[in-house]
Amino acid sequence: MTPQKTPVFLQRCMQILWPSFLMAGVTEVLVFAVVDPGDLRWFGGEVIGWSSSATYTVSFLIFWFTISMATAITALLLVEQDRPV
Image (cartoon, rainbow, N blue to C red; front, side):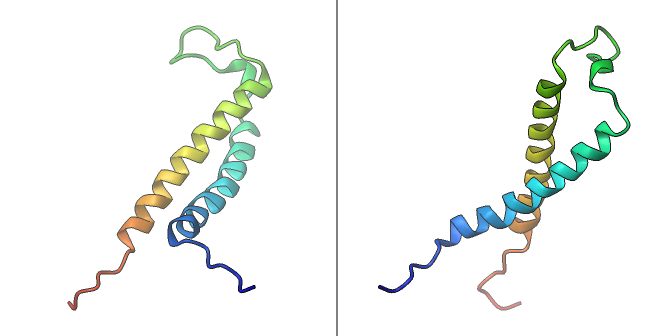
């Protein structure tokens, strides 16, 4: 049996999602080394009132999404054109 090639789209997704996953973890550690999740407030108003693990999870997903979008835009801009310059 010959090994199958990974589809280009799947390979591109992994090139975007894996580094952004790692950087979201780093960002999470850096942010919550300074910020106490129990002290977070809605735009200066009431305390959010979530558990620490819920705050960590939602924050991680927000960081991951944001970094993934930045990486995806960069990957989109780096796609080479087939036409000569």
